[in-house]
Length: 318
Image 1: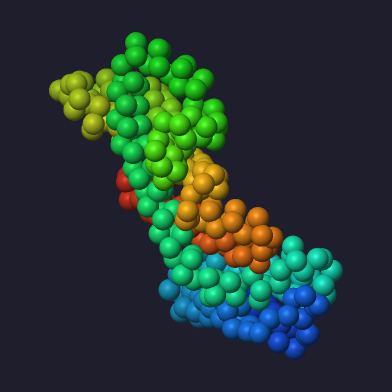
Image 2: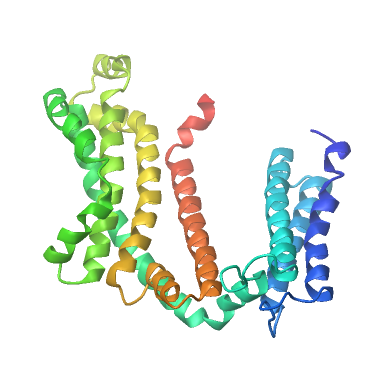
């Protein structure tokens, strides 16, 4: 453990959030950045402060968390604290940049409250499209990748084709998708599906094809054969590689979801972004960026938990 010397900076990190609150209330807003309420930004800063205080007490003094976890948490809080402080000073108070295109934290984050109904509807629509696209992509990619990777002759034929077609950006399929599918909703699901399918498919093939042959030979020596070896030996050994492809597909799926929704969707986080870009409402654009970031964090956190549970056997080998 690094000890008290390494923890002396933690109260200073927590103080950044309180200093930002004080500056936000005591220093006048720059011209064009005036707001009627500072409640949303203040609440967000207090949440960060309270979380830091809890981690400091429970993690450092009460030893409820590991030292590495505490240190990592405060490293993240340092980044957030400095970001919010600089955002407040340079955009909210100094007026160094055009307030129309560079909103203060109060203006941008107040949108989360005033447009909460639109965000709720948009997030629900986007997540439903994302779930359908990801589910369809993985249901097809993983079994097909397992089969192709297992049969050497099929692997020699399909894997080079997959490496040729897979890197093509999913966005290039949008013009034909608009012709084939009757609704923009289905087009969006298809684009997410393409974005998820190819990375997961290619990585599953590669993971299966590169499994240590000694594991397969040992399983056969012990009486294993056919699909029992595939499901009990090959599939678990290939899953770490497959998960790398799934993560890449997940991230690309979210990116392409946002792009596809800007084409002609009537709702969604991408639609919200494009609509307010056309009317130059940059406070709403910044708010939507935060919403998209939160959605990405949720999905990657969920992915990490699924991967951790699925590959729990790896813990003992590290």
